Amino acid sequence: MIYLDNAATTLRKPECVVKAVTEALTTLGNASRGAHGSSLDSNRVIYKARSRAAALFNSKRPEQTVFTNNSTEALNIAISGTIGEGDHVITTELEHNSVLRPLYRLEKERQVKLSIIKADKKGCVEYEDFERAIRPETRAIVCTHGSNLTGNLLDIKRIGETAERHGLLFILDASQTGGSIGIDMEESKVSILCFTGHKSLMGPQGTGGLCIRGDIDVRPFKTGGTGVQSYLKEQPREYPTRLEAGTLNGHGIAGLLAAMEFIDETGISKIHEHEIKLMRLFYDRVKDIPSVRVYGDFSPKERCPIVTLNIGDLDSAVVADELSFNYDIAVRAGAHCAPLMHKALGTESRGAVRFSFGYYNTVEECEIAADAVKDIAERSE
Ligand SMILES: Cc1ncc(COP(=O)(O)O)c(C=O)c1O
Image (tube, rainbow, N blue to C red; front, side, top):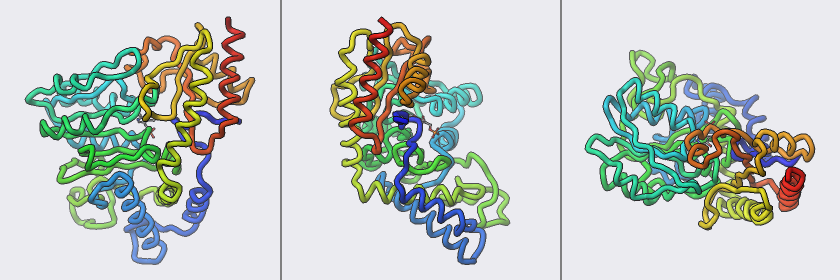
C-alpha cells in the first residue's frame, strides 16, 4: 500500500518508537504510584518526555508540559480551563472541530461570544481582521498553525504579536505541525500550545499534550487520582498534576519520547524538507491536469505537506475508493472535521481528496500517486 494519509496519523513509525513501546509494556509501572523500581522507571521516562516536549517547542517550564490522550483533549483543557462567562474569543475558518466544538459549547454554556476570521477561496486569512475583531471583553485568540485541509500555514508570529500587544491569551493548535515545523513558543508568544503525538511527531496514538507558557491559571478539566496529596479534596494546584488526573499513558509516552529523540537526531528541518519535496513533486504533476482542481495557497515556501484536490464533478469518496481499490493508495476524502474550511472553499457537498506526505514516503510513491490521479481524471472526462 502507498500510504498518503499522514495528516490523519503517521502509519509508519521510526523503529526506535516500536522498540520503546514494546519495552515499556513489560517494564514500566504506574508513575507516581509507588516507590519501587518499575514505578520510578515510569516517572523517569515521563519526566524525560516532558523535558523533551518542552524543549521542542521552547517552553521554559517543563513542569507545565501536561500529557493528554491527543490534541483534542489538550484543546478542551486549554479552552474550557481559561475562557469564562461572557468572554469573547477570536478563531478562524481554518479550524478543526477540536477547536470549533469546544468553543461552540462555551457559546451555549458560558455565553461566550465568537468572532470567526474568514478565509478566502484559497484558504488564506487577512491578518488585519484579527486586530479588527478585538473588543474590550476579548480573552483569547484560538487558532491552528496549519490547516489540515489545505496545508496553508497561519503566520503565528504575527498573530502572537497581536495577542501579546492586546493582553490576550494565544492558544495554538499545533496538531499538523508539531514535529515537522519548528515552533518557538517564546518567539511566537504562544500562551498554550496543544499537540498530538501520532501525526508528524511520529509517536503512538493516545499521546498528546499542552505546553503552558508563564503564569497562566488553567482550571482542571477532570479531577481524580494523582498519586500525590491524596488527602486534598480538590485537584493539587501545582502543574502538571493539576491537569493530569488518572494513570498516564506511560507506554505511549515512552514511544513519544523515542519519537522526539528520533526527530532531534534526524533534524526537524531535514524531515520537513523531505516532506515538502514530495508534496511539491506531487503538486507540480497534478496541478495542470485538466479537470483537476487543487485547493490552498502554494505560493509560500513554508506549508504543511498536504495537497487537496477534486477531479471533475466526482465525489471525493468515489475518488478515494478508486485510489484505494484500483491503485492501493490510501488518502482521505470527505470533510476532514473542518466544516468551515470546506464551506469557504465551496467543497461542502462533495468534500475533497487529501494527499498528505510523511517522512517515510518516497519520490516513486508520489509519482505513482500523481499518475493515478491523471488516469482517473482522463477516464472521468
Ligand atoms: C488541525 C487539527 N487539529 C486537531 C486535530 C485533532 O487531533 P487528535 O485527533 O489527535 O486529537 C487534528 C486531527 O486531524 C487536526 O488536523
